[in-house]
Image (cartoon, rainbow, N blue to C red; front, side, top):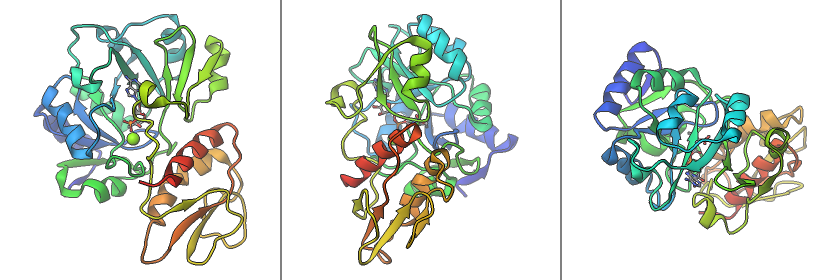
Length: 313
Ligand code: TXA
Ligand code: MG
């Protein structure tokens, strides 16, 4: 059985697999990650192979504590302020990489930067502490597909190709971390997420928004086609057309899946990827119509993912 309860025995087995250079899927507060020991070249290479991920798209390195960063990333006051405020939590920092560190160069091929975050999930924390090494981990989905927020989602994409999927239940936040580039004087948001630009600005001053700009250079992962179900996605819909499923926000008539009956964006974010996966059934629907989502706070991150989903695979 690939899916394992994330108890002490499950985590101990996962650590053995990781030390042997194999991959383990594990829960974080955002989405499930596909983890490899970040110090092993071959293990990191397996991540790209298993996801069919283009190798120009770098991976996030996950740490158990902020003091693990000093070995492989260059730090400044902003890192200190932001990690104190938001770690553990859904904020990824892109930093200059220390040359000659123990981290595999394959996590960010051809770049002199490295993305890092400390996840806020007891299973992720226990795994990192037991392994005593950073984990390179992208979202545990096939490249271009919708990110997984349950162990079953991971199983649907990878099944028996993985030895262990640690089951930590549904992810609390349900949307990937905010990616913030700190390699320039003015910080830049490369991917909107749960932590808002305003929250970051209030601590370190102005940030610029690079989302949707020719981000293929800045954040290679922000490919246009991403987060896509197999069915076409139609945005800002007032109602479903013939055969479509209708994803709504706040009580609406004719709904197939209401992201948040109370109209709460945090709840909608937690449900979004489950809705996109659950309704992606060509035997039942011809497409997914999505009602408008307010473009404020976490709604900006939701709309970012929906726009990419609507561009198809
Ligand atoms: O919430 C999350 O961030 C989840 C959990 C598992 O931690 N991880 C995740 O990883 O979403 P992934 O690989 O699906 O997305 C990472 C994003 C990609 O857009 C990638 O291009 C960007 O971060 N990224 C990683 N390293 C980078 C770097 N050195 N410079 C710029 N962007 C980077
Ligand atoms: Mg991903």
